[in-house]
Image (cartoon, rainbow, N blue to C red):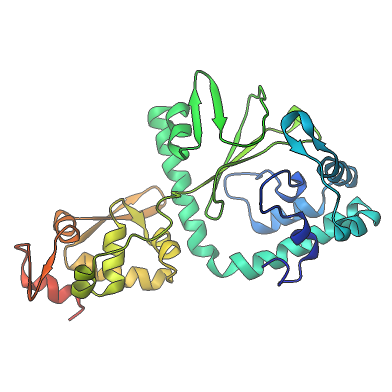
Length: 301
């Protein structure tokens, strides 16, 4: 996509197989919910000497950490020859275009899903402490005996007082951004996929889809765990308004309930919804004793 969108610098710096990506491209968040413009301005205003030193780190590698160097691609070399400030400006412009193409149309729903994850983390941290929080993020992240471990093919150990934790809706696996040029001066940033197993929508049975319609059946199947309208919209590639409409129908039918959690409203199955999701449709009937009125409401009649 980067090449098709004519983003030459990003396409040459992106690493499909993992490895070091210059840190100035992913600035540390300035707060819990930084604006896109703030992040882009951080990229644009990166000190030129830092940009050049990070490109040198990309070229030379860090052999003792298992990170091999690589020849800078031609486009990166051309941009580098014009100075670190030029590289930072071009990178910021390309990141903006990539944002507009890939993320801006979905940002409202995505941000709500990320906010809900931050609220979840805050609740775990307040109730159970940091160890439980880290161990809840992903199977590849573990906290034990005062050490935080993240699965990686690279080898590095850092005694640090602070770790910046960032949830992601697009990261396929956990990753750690460690500044290769300034060592401990910049705390590592741990990025992890949000609900990595729950991003793919749950598949309803054919019988339940016949009863409720495919969209409502899919949403009910997804609600094995509570979720917000925004989270469901992201997972099912629907607009929040469409999801809200269908959840309203399921709510009036008594199949889902809703309750506020922090800044989000979470939906969950009611006992009737749980039984329906686990039942089998049999011809004109179903294995539940729920009133036929629930079926009519579920179909919107």
